[in-house]
Structure formats: C-alpha cells, structure tokens
Length: 77
Image (tube, rainbow, N blue to C red; front, side, top):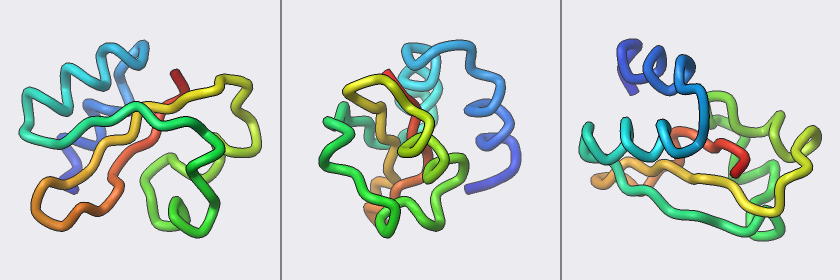
C-alpha cells in the first residue's frame, strides 16, 4: 500500500470515513466480527494487530486489496 493511502487511512476520523476512502480507491471492504480476526492474520497489517488487544468494539472494518486479498487496514467499528 502506498504512503498516500496509508496517510488517508491514518487521518480518517471514524470507520465510515475509512470505508469511503477504501471504496474510492478501489479496495474491498467488509465488516467482521472481532472473534473472526486473530493476531496471526493481522501481523503484517498497517495498524492492525494492536486493535485486538485494545478494542472494545464487537466488529471491525477490514480493508483488503482486491488483487491479492491481503488485509491492508483494520479499524474498530
């Protein structure tokens, strides 16, 4: 993921904004129950793994690369 997209996700003020940024830039977006996510899956995710330990939300917005299916960003929802 390029630096511009990382900066956009980083500057998002809420999960809805992350969804808009992802869709506008051609990424897949899904809402996942946090029980479906584990640290191994999120190890290389930009800003991802820390949410599992600190998150009090039940769900997260998961942004994926359409070509590779790799998780790019995870935000508590």
